[in-house]
Image (cartoon, rainbow, N blue to C red; front, side):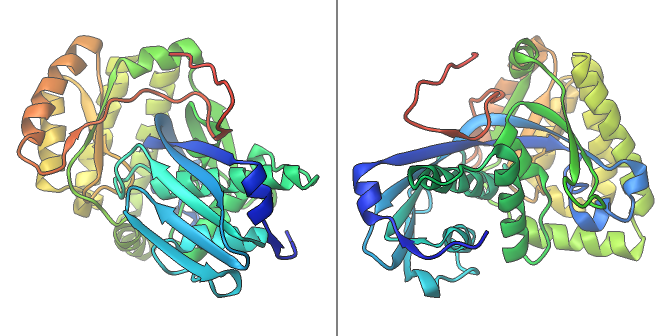
Length: 363
């Protein structure tokens, strides 16, 4: 994708551009990392994720020629550099990498997220996906080909994996691009598309599932790259490999139960997954996360941390009445934290989109 440097100041003064992408919760995360999935491709590595309508919004604004500004309402921070000097290892390094790839300057990329920051929900990936979508809309205004969803996914993953030195998987970007409830089979040995995506639920099924999930922010942030590095090291040594393979079988069964709308059986598989993760990923379990999961299991639900855990978000699956009761239990636990709270959300069916146009909400 070779592009000459171009100034967007005048274009953005005349054409405001905004886009957004959803975050996600998951089962079987970590298997989307190449170090896990590629050597054991014969085991059919699988991740299931649910896109959530806690969206990250990108707005492109005009800025001084030659410069790129990244700002975040949630972080209360901003960084500004000449395009040829943007850092790829700063707080906004991923966003600068996106701008650099497109070769655009004279713009501000303003980020606003509905979800908590560093919450294990794939927020950085959602921001990158939304930014690539927005800059793709710029290409269309310049009478160039707009990027399709497959191209957005390809660029978002490889950029984030690059600036994180190979520590990223593909599931976060996948949920942000496509939305919905998906089962992902990872095939990194393929030259073209390294995954197979199966949509597990139609619009009605997504509505049913939304009534049976509960999502809560634990009140503390996490750093997924640091936690993932520990897990990868143990996996590469062979110390935890058999447990990961067993966990993968559980995730495949979980996908089947969601597809069949067997919610109670799906909750049981979440409990089974967590039981193994307590052994192979103990760093993911903080006291608050452990308490929330234990409360969910006592209510007959299943729950797990989102992403790499170690803080961040916990989500639960159960029957409607059990989830209603669990909401009260979790709210009581989270009162003891500074920032912990229930996140009111539902499955997002859309994926990445341009903002400013009428969008039908299936809920």
